[in-house]
Image (cartoon, rainbow, N blue to C red):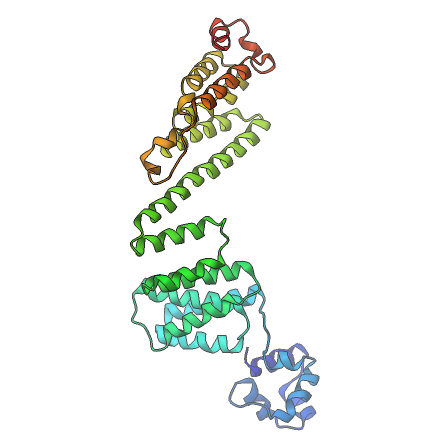
Length: 345
């Protein structure tokens, strides 16, 4: 907000006319009118009297605010979008530059404004204006200094993309340090750099690690939702989630053990003897393939240690012991198939 706008806003909030304000300051009403319309500025000696008269600080009068409210930022972004829609790109860009000069320390506004104009130019395939890229780069770097972690990460992400577009991959890679090593996005971006710089095997490995960890995360999340559905007694929703788990295991090539084992709990809750026995048989038969993904071409660039025979035998034994639990599977006690299954130890 320019000083004239600040004067007008605060004068009106005090129900003061331009004439009244002029009289109290010892100037003319046309002078106040010129200030408010941006045609001239108050003399420096009048700044303190104006601030006292309006009941604001000098910082507010001069618009030296580091931060804007979220509502104010959204309003400016909306106005930028409107200008991009109705004016030339250069006109809108010059307006944005002037606005950012008014709020040079408002990192969220700086970043969002730069991102909007950067994205608009790329989407519309517009020619680069003089000093445009330098301006956009400077905005991203300024946002990178923010004390807000999310904003720093967003700025680092934009700078990464900025240098990838320029094919300056070594420079792009430096911005990965702003992401946590546990952040999958860091690894994905690293894979992009590997691929762009001819390190193909490393790129494959990074992507495959992401793929495998993605299965683990999604599987746990589906299971968490499944547990909530079961606690609510919503077995239909639970059934749908089990089917999703099966499909997930198939898509990620986890092997049949992972595909069938996820259905055991629901079948047990329903006391569906035939399905429970079938699942138990398949689980025991596929213990040797419990790490089915090891042989999948989806993960051929990852080094896996094959499970030892004694380890697999121990898993099978533990499964059979678990299947003997009468508290859980007591409804199968008279079923000969179950008796044969659990006694094969």
